Amino acid sequence: NAGVTQTPKFQVLKTGQSMTLQCAQDMNHNSMYWYRQDPGMGLRLIYYSASEGTTDKGEVPNGYNVSRLNKREFSLRLESAAPSQTSVYFCASSEGGLAGGELFFGEGSRLTVL
Amino acid sequence: QKEVEQDPGPLSVPEGAIVSLNCTYSNSAFQYFMWYRQYSRKGPELLMYTYSSGNKEDGRFTAQVDKSSKYISLFIRDSQPSDSATYLCAMRRNSNYQLIWGAGTKLIIKP
Image 1: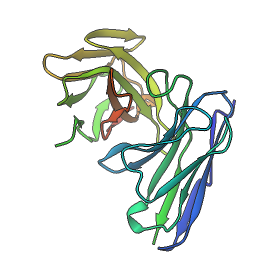
Image 2: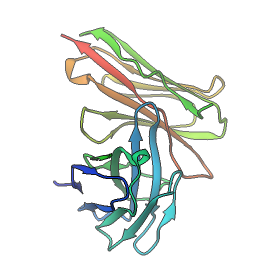
Image 3: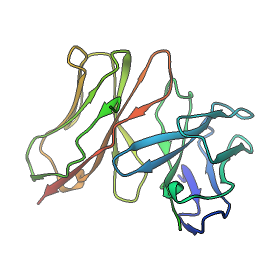
Image 4: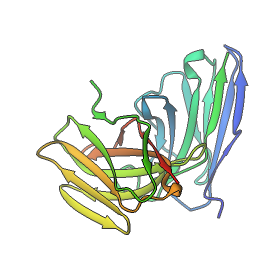
């Protein structure tokens, strides 16, 4: 089982460049999430999509945009990357939304902004 | 002050020891408590899920919630080298579905 697949796994950007992180899940889950993980900070929610066609801001949405392309795919875009966006990004999915159910995570995308 | 505090460690113990991992929190409205395990360069995976107060046991793992002290614990019995990982606590309120995460404790089990 593939579960949650993220691409790319590693990326180095220069300040001001743009990029899109891709995420796909094959568990037929309704809800998908993007988190960032920084040392000493825990996981912080960037955006989430409770169901296909909806997206909502999380705790730290500034500098990011998302697209729920279909039920399987949820992408995260950095329009103009900044060094503060250097982080490990995790995509996750769940069956029942934030209110319930286990979160299933991808393996992460490690982004460095120079 | 963070809503959820967790000692980052590392916590190093010999194989076979009982491990105690803890989180404290400030918001008395938290009702759902979770422990996730994260191996190096992998995503977190759910280990234990508890609602409100009390204990929950699953094999070698026991999750404990003390709402009066705003304190949750994860106990690992007969620890194994394969338990070496970072353990993240997470919690949320009934009315707000956003999970609040601890920073994680790195655990090392020495053979």
